[in-house]
Amino acid sequence: MERTLVILKPAALQRELVGEILSRFERKGLYFVGMKMMQLNDALLNEHYGHLKEKSFFGDVKAAMSASPVIVLCLEGVEAVRVVRAMAGVTNGRNAEPGTIRGDYSMSVEQNVIHASDSIETAEVEIKRFFKEEELFDSKRVGGSFYYAKYE
View: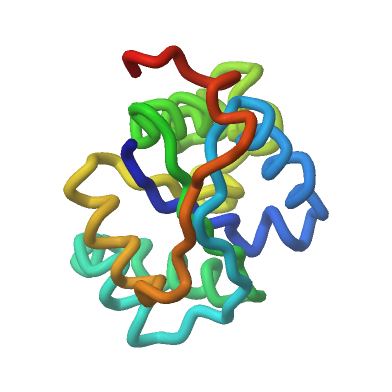
């Protein structure tokens, strides 16, 4: 099983979309193995968005991500990174397909309600950035056999 990181951004919390977004992941069959609410500080934002440091909009991204608390999730499932990215939709909400999270709930690039890890390698780094090992839990479910075939 693969793990990925998701951040429900301040826009998702302020617009009261948390339950709807969480239910999409749950209905899809992804397992919640970590979840917490937190306020992102400057040091964490500089680390997480360091790849954007030279961009003109870096300050705006940091301001948007620190405008209110966020909810950070660690989700687990077969091909979880790819599945969650597909569910999230493209970064610009105006271009995201209807039926995706951004396509249904966003008209913005910056206020696009969700962050999702873009690769397995990135997910591993991001999960460690936001979660201590003891904050992650076993995903075993009684109904697990109803989500995947034995060979998956």
